[in-house]
Length: 253
Image (tube, rainbow, N blue to C red; front, side):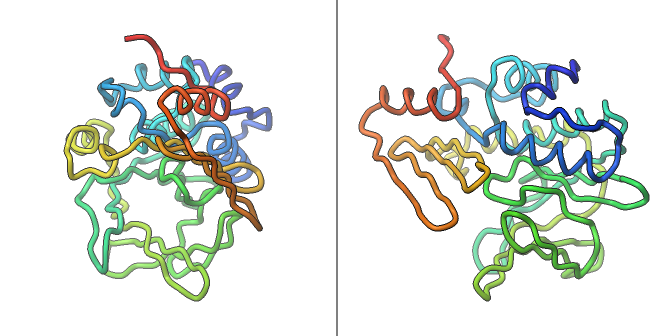
C-alpha cells in the first residue's frame, strides 16, 4: 500500500504517530473525503473483498464504497501506520428489536495507548470520530450523542441519542474477524433483492457543516439549520451532479 497516496486522497497531512489524536484525525479526514456509495452494484461491477482491488478503486480512481470496502481499507491503512487493529462483525438494527445477520456490517476495534476505540468509516450517516470502547459511556461527537452498552453478556450495542429518543445503530461481539469472512454477506448485499443496496443508488458524505447526499432522484444538502433539495430529472443530470459534488465519473465498461 502506498500510504502517501492514501493520505493525499483523504487530505490528511497531520502527525502519523499511532496515538488517539492521529486516529481521530485520520478517521475524520477519511469520512470527509471518501463517500459512502453503492454505484458498482447498479453499474454491474462486482465488488470483491480484495484489498488491492479496493485500494485501486478508492485511492486510484477516487471512488467511494460501502462498509466492507471502506472500513476494510481504512483498517489496512491503520495497520501500515503501526496501529493494532481487529475487524469485527456487526448486525445492523432493523425494526423493533430485530437486527440483521452476522457479517451484515464491518467495524474496527483499534488498540491505542492502552485504550480500545471503535472506528467505523463505512456506515453512512454516523459518527465523525472514533468512539472509546467503554461500557455505559455516553460520548459527544460532532455528528451527535452516542452510547455504548452491553444488552447481553459478550454483546455490545451502539445507540444514538437524539431529541429524547434512543436510536439503536448496531450490535457486535468483539471477536476478531478476517476480511474473507464477510464475503457471503458482501455478495448478498450487492445481488439480493432483499438488500436495500440493490434498490437504489446512494452516494453520501459529511461536509464540515452538514451532509451532501445524491440519489437517482435528488441531491440533498443538509446543514445545522436548513435543508436544500434539487430534483434530478435524468441519468445525464445524475452523472453531472455525481461528477460535480463527488468527483466520480462512470468508467466505460
